[in-house]
Image (cartoon, rainbow, N blue to C red; front, side, top):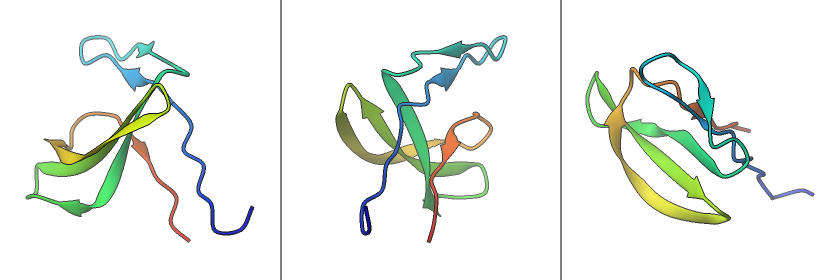
Length: 68
């Protein structure tokens, strides 16, 4: 559909061993905005709801949103 963006609940990686958790239930997507060189903003999706962007460490393996 034109004008719509689909962001799947891609899960999240565990910080210890990199294993994938919450696939289909949770997703974190990086924003194009950043706080500083080590911190960026993310959008958190959980069970079909979203939370506002908030700062998070860039070293974590979150998904990247598409840009048209």
